[in-house]
Length: 292
Image (cartoon, rainbow, N blue to C red; front, side, top):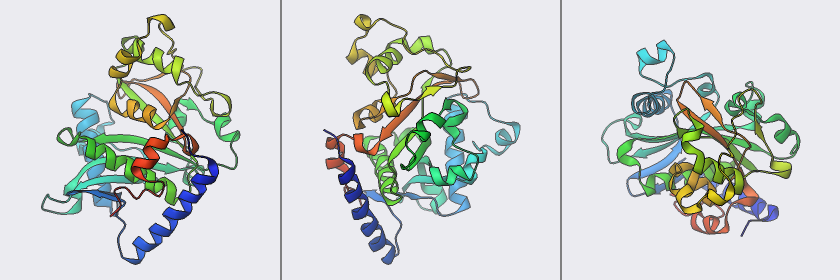
């Protein structure tokens, strides 16, 4: 089941009204479950906290390589941080400033902002220009740098990250979302089963087709279809990629090895009109499921 474009526009109108009501009450919280809440970072200190979490997960846990200055500061930082909005999940039960409460983050970059800032991060790995050119009237948003502290890797945290991203997308009338998602390790063949399943069953086509840059392209179609067991392939996938598939996402053609982060990246493509009706019903077409 998919949502039609007209329904998406109605949902956007509903959220715009809800956002105005929230602003009139003086709150910018996009969702709340128990002591956890999600919203966009308000201060430089909160952005710094998000970068610190990214450093702990990407560098200390996953072994990513970052520039010497970032190593010295203990932060994962790049030029896109200056122009992106930083979606946060905060644990309000922790005493202290809000920057000490940040337990998860997502980086959001709208097309209108990217246009004036030199493009999207994903463009360093995937050729987005043909995709964007085929949809001149649509608003795109990039999702990236998804990161959750180990002790908060729970269903409710992931629900709040998606709640926040969904509410943000509706507020800004986004028509499609995309972004890099990663498999651990820089050897695609180690993920042959999952990558082959994605290529054979979720490849973006037609107007949504997009591919890795030719010089970085690594084939995902590594196994014959008769050898690909769907259940085993799904269980071998990172939770984030599996979650995107459940929402109704498609996958770009080709993987890219990010040697600095020691990951194998694929491109997620998620038109709003393709989001599974099951999830629209769960979160609410107006993102009201966990709204404060």
